[in-house]
Image (tube, rainbow, N blue to C red; front, side, top):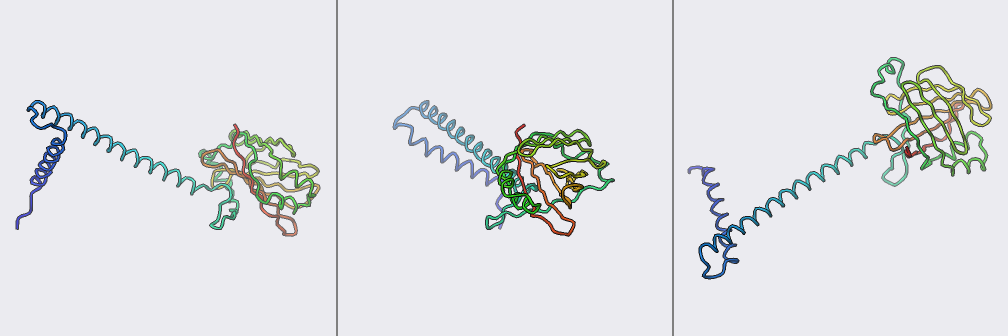
Amino acid sequence: MKARSSGGGAGDGTVVGLLLVSISASFFVPHGASVSDIARTLHVLIERIYVVSVLGYLSVLFYKQHRQSSRIKLDAELHERDGPRVADDGSYVVVSPPESLNADEEEEDGDIVNLTGTFKLAKNIDFDKFLEAQGIGWALRSAANKARPVHKITHRGRTLRIQITGIITGDTTYQIGGPPVTSQIRDRVFSDTVQYLASRDGIRVQKKCVSGGDGKIFVVRQLSRCGSELTMRSKCVFEDGRESAEAVQTFERIS
């Protein structure tokens, strides 16, 4: 048995197409119409079929492009590494802060994120517990948990300035990877050092209490990929080995 040639298949398709046009035309051409009327009707019908085909093709292209864009957006959201994740049961799962870069790795900081911007607190998770572990009274904890402070960050090269306005105020300038800087929160004095995160999307501040308390506070700030959110994670580790709950705070960019 000989295989059917591809030319025969194309010819059959053409015949079928002409047959469908002829059948369709029979519904639009009045009985006894002249040859010119039939030709004109067929011409109009073919034009309409062509237009419908083009619109259908464009609709399919638009649908595929929309699906691809939606998939890319979903992938970006699923791969967001900043802030707490939501578990299947609806509870929050806090991710431990990433490691910092060592001195050699910090030399290659050309692709490290720039944190410059003004951010306002939008959400707290376990901030009250974090403060309670440090002996902060209920009244101040309650006020701090309800406050919506603004953090203004100016990041130029290795120089980082963090200005805080709200119930707690502060204005500290650091040299990332540089010597310790003294900072103060109410009656507690700290010696701060700052390093870039190994993930290159933020910084980690180590605050060693030198007066008014004990232990160290680790504060990690990470900027989202789109740059619209800043996540701050804070944990206190005391000299006796105790650890506070990790506070996770989400800030939204306002400028």
